[in-house]
Length: 228
Image 1 (cartoon, helix red, strand yellow):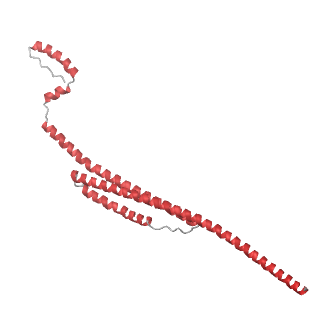
Image 2 (image 1 turned 45 degrees about the vertical axis):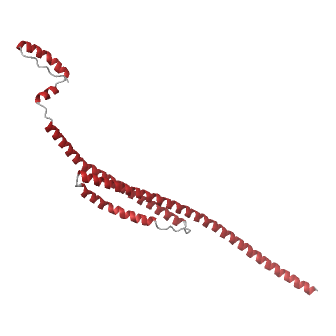
Image 3 (image 1 turned 180 degrees about the horizontal axis):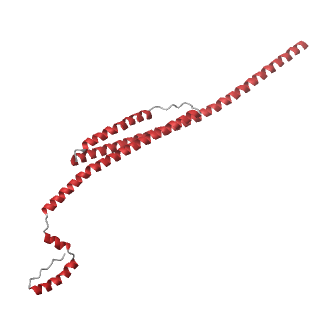
C-alpha cells in the first residue's frame, strides 16, 4: 500500500508540473493573442484612414476633371467667337489664332499626362509614417502642378482676349475715320455759319446794338444774327 501511495504521489507531482507548464503556455498564448488583436486594431484604423483618403482623392479628381472640362469649353467658345469676329473684322486674326492653338498644344499634352496620373490606382496597403510623408509630398506636388496648369490656362485666355482687342481696335478706328470723312464731305458748313456758330448768345445780343446805331448812321439795313 505504501508503494502505491508513493507512486500516486509521484504521479500527482508530475501532473502538477505538467499543469504548471500548460498554464505558462496558455498565459504566453494569451499575451500573443492580445498583441495580435492590438495590431489588428491598428491595421483596421490605418485601412479606414486609407479608404477615407482614397475617397477624398477621388472626389478631388472628379472636381478637377470637371473644372478642366469647363475651362476647355470656355476656351473653345472664346476661340470660336474670336474666329468669327476676326473673320468679319480682320482676316489676319486667323493666322494669329492658329499660332495660339499651336501654343495651347503643350498644355493639352500636360492635361493628358495629368489625367493619366489621376487615373492611376492608389494602393490601400498599410504604410509606415515615412510612406505617409511621401504621400503628403506627392499630394502637394500634385496640387502645385494643377494650380500651375490653371494659371497657364488663365494666361492663355488673357492673351487671347488682348489679341482680340488689339486686332479689333484698328478696324474700329478705320471705320470711325471713314465715317468722319463721309460726314465731313457730305455736310460742309459755310464759313459764315461757322462764324455765327462760334459767337455765343450774349455776345450776339450785345453786338446787335452797335450794328443798329451803325446802320442808322450809314443808312444800311440791319442784319440780324440768328439766335440759337
